[in-house]
Image 1 (cartoon, rainbow, N blue to C red):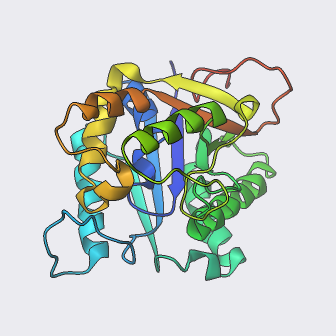
Image 2 (spheres, rainbow, N blue to C red; image 1 turned 90 degrees about the horizontal axis):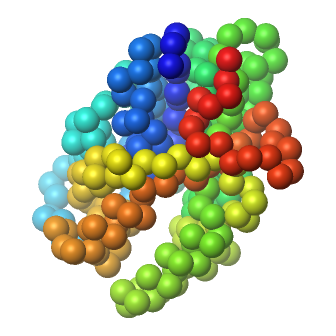
Length: 268
């Protein structure tokens, strides 16, 4: 790859960024001009804590900020720019939409990333914070793209193939966990297989994705429920993150178009 390539990821909470694009970041880390921009709407301070985590004597949000930094250090390619918007966890959907668009859009306007990734309308888990961040990022992307300036060539949404979701749900049952209900908030929601327009093979760096995920220790019950740390199941965990599926929200994808294999594939 020649020239500059900027990738921006806009999410709600620490650990949201640990899925979906961490492998892509690792694959491109040595590309000339590669730049990774990460935006968090909130520090996740209102979340639950894994029952196995030691008692805490400081705000959870402060711990989760440190976990996020440790995760990208363990991964090996921290963001070139990282912004906290500092909204309250669980209340991002109550932020005036125009304000959220302006905050996110201001960062995107400064960076003019080639590719922007965020949540789709389902928020992957139906979490209101996820849905609000995704909608605001979409609006900011659309508004900036209309000015004719550089960058903003592709908008991506994280997603889970229904066929994969069904396989993972079977694994949850085998581990004695309640299966996901796609209509229940906080449970993973699938998208139809044919909406996935991009699948990045990140198997060669899957161990780095897992290394990052492992640093989100307060969220182990969410990140990998039912999988004990340092167990043989961790190998299966690496396999489960070896592909990064994405919905191409912009430009419009033609029905039957080939599934792309990289976030920058086909861009100018």
